[in-house]
Image 1 (cartoon, rainbow, N blue to C red):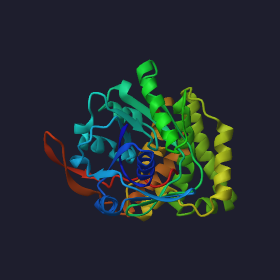
Image 2: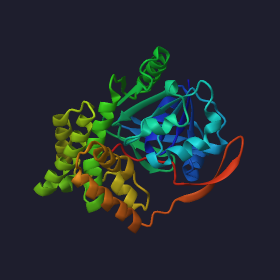
Image 3: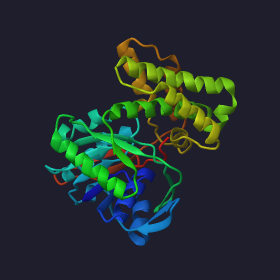
Image 4: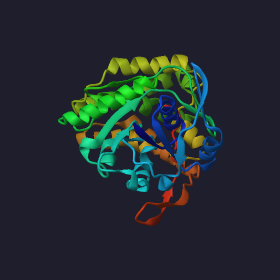
Length: 336
């Protein structure tokens, strides 16, 4: 199978690297030229609990890619999805399928603007990954992925997703087909909307929040708002499971800085609008108050402003035209 990874940050590099190690034809796309050049010259170093190995996937800037993939796997941040897909429009052949394993809500709708429903799969992952430097990604600990065909009525789409899942599992990326992946996605949003936002605003690690009873309570209140909005839309979500996950993280991930906090510290834009912001908007539409998330959303946006987030400008070209677009690096960090 031919796999193209759109967004070769930590997650994209890990998935692409493991698929390449399993013998698939893989191309990693990103605009981080130092990362791409390191892989060209010295390969991609995968550091996992099973040991270290180096693989040699193809790499390219999005506009320069020429491989027409069977699957395009999107790992960009949510706010970069449209720009990134426009940059690789020339790779979306009549049989190319697209999988989103991105954070947040609204990813299906963003993909549908570019790809037919029967060629889209959506999913969620809890696989840990960290970028250690150009050409070097690490993954320690355990995580899984779940996905499903967006067109639930198409047997062909379901068969393609099953083949994808089989390839992932053979590449030591534990993955299952979910009958209701939206429940899984909302469960992760309930986790991230609580811990990511509060850590981003306070600068605290996950463990620091757990040490202060009022902060721990605030985490659970924020998550409870997500659960309430999901349930109002008949989206099944294991509320007790979410709260157990939060307590476990605060009790054991003592020094972890969630990705939203890492983004602010690095002066990067966050995914706040697709996480807390999306839940607030759904709550407004449904007549459900989300006071904690509304405040957290506003405060993270303020922190972004103070961090002077400045996207880079580069020329994004496709086979038909060349346009100048504003885009931040196509990267992701951890699953939190």
